[in-house]
Length: 553
Picture (cartoon, one colour):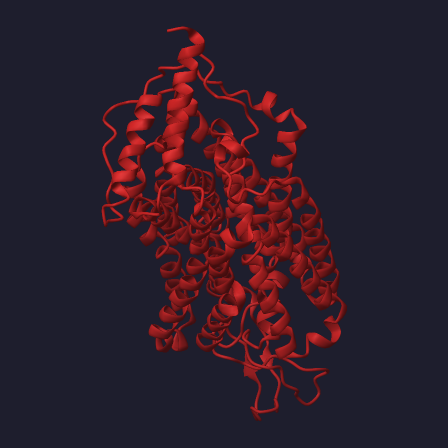
């Protein structure tokens, strides 16, 4: 057989194998891929966002005795006390950011430490997923998460050394590496096993588990605080158990999913386009189609036969591929849109004390007292205070966040990725501008603020927060898909770090309108950057790759 005939034959076998995947009916193996990846994303979101409620408890327990002093004045309205009331960690929330040296930046670093780890994990696992294969790397990220979640929950200060905050941030950084690795691996595997018709829906469903993770995190706090209310009411140091339980529960979904990830088969697309074994890929596609009919999400097969290079395929030359503007603009668009989205999304999500104040779930209303200028926060048992905060956070999660994810799952194949992304960026920009312009009045109108805030939260999820995850999993060729997704996600985490550490500490007082204007400007830039991206709906991964035939000999 001539070389040209051989290439034609192997290319035809590749096309047939992929066509079977692309045209397959939605089945049980597809559901398995979504569930296995989705459980990981549930754990990712739980671990990332649970820290925002843990930190105030840590500050209260470990820094309350040091920074809380003085007393409440006589005759506070509604209390009518005849004598001063001493301020203690039991009845007063510690002002950590105001009293701790450079407290605002320390708080921001603790919230962002996971995102720094995400950045490393997304780049590292993205590259290794293309270099070593999806199967070899999938599950490793969950093992890292399991170890570091346990470490975070059991962390304690050194008697003569590093504080609990420093040690916790170290554990959270390495936890972030595992979480970061989950992004490119889960997106790539789900995308490469999916059919064309439901690929966007499957990727969206994986990502929507973030909303469930955020919601469950709030529920865990409420349940734990309720169960321990009487103990905390009499001894504030019992909060030390609450935040450890909340962080530790993040290990449960990770443990539940790790076996299934370690046993997931290599994707046929990687087997052909990177390894060069068309025969094994064809065999694996047949097994996928067979398992689609087996009514179980735990079914798989043992890949005892190792794929070997039987044809020469185009090798990875990352820089040569992306030096072409038609390819680079796609990477640029994916990376910048994710960056823009995360500046505002994380800047708002991990700095929610302002929002909690506005919806009156951040402690009691301020009162007046004789001889005191203005109003002051009255004494309030921390058992009730932290329960109040947990309820407020759960309300925020339901305010558009969870519904937005699942609206996107339902409609992403009907509307397409780009229309949803354009719409989301536009509506969020409008909401942020309204809040900035009307801040002096709307900040005093709980209902009006909540309406605008809920709309913004809904369109974060039914918009760029979901589509920036989906699109990078579809638009790059197989040999660079994991790397391209990892780079895009890593740039998102750069945006998150900017939102949390550079902007977040200023998100208070008279600076709030300015911060909202900044967020609105960044969101608007994401709207225009979307123009760089192709619409993946209805196209195969090979059509989207901007690449000629992969088999070359």
